[in-house]
Length: 282
Ligand code: GUN
Image (cartoon, rainbow, N blue to C red; front, side, top):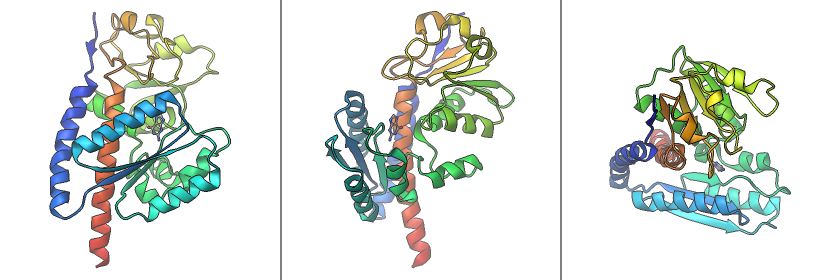
């Protein structure tokens, strides 16, 4: 069996098309959704991702502002920038590209973002709501993965989903979202001793480790759905795994485009939410 290749770009384009209509409605109400992106230092991968995010904002007609800061910025200076963006009426969403330099505490920066502008869904308030199944902003990559599975009409309820990787950005939140969809979820990580044995029980495998080529065909049950979150290099040995899986995401062109689509969706949502709150108060 050769797996069907999941086309993240096509699904992204469908989502962006819907968002374009919502943007038109917002603009008629005098609102242009605005996203501020903060990038610290010159990590080449981060620069690439931020460039792609801004490009999509522009294509959608969204307002965007990039704040590029040198790696020696202090935590206090960065918090001050976040506070300024929290107050900025033209900005509905704030994204601080991770990772940050080692001298800056990521939690302190994320917590400084107004939870209503936290389009990444990383603020403890939004993480807490995700935990109780009442999230407003879903974290972008996990939400993109669920959207892909649903787009291809894949059954999630009752399936065994194995998530490899336990990051706050992907592994933990995608596990919660899969649980919300009634999957039976197993989480594996770098200290899991019998990785191949566990992963090969998965009907759905989410590989989000950042370790290139970690999973091969020996890890995959025939007919499983394989979602590769590796970037820029794949976590999955694509050529051999596609011979056993039923569906597989390519890298690039699988999950990555969906992350950006979900970021745009959250920014539009943040703008809509502001209008609703303002209307209620008036
Ligand atoms: N670094 C890698 N993925 C992400 C993401 O989704 N959001 C942010 N802010 N940083 C990241």
